[in-house]
Length: 53
Image (cartoon, rainbow, N blue to C red; front, side, top):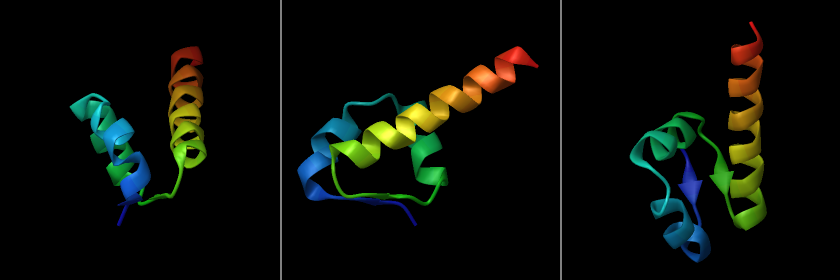
């Protein structure tokens, strides 16, 4: 189950519903803004890899 720390909840909630759902499906722990950025970076890289296929 994905955990979003209260300190970054506002940033997380500002994302689109689709993006939030993708993050929630990953069962990650978001303790700070760096964790959120890292997950977003992985999502972008995976999307880029899919586009190259």
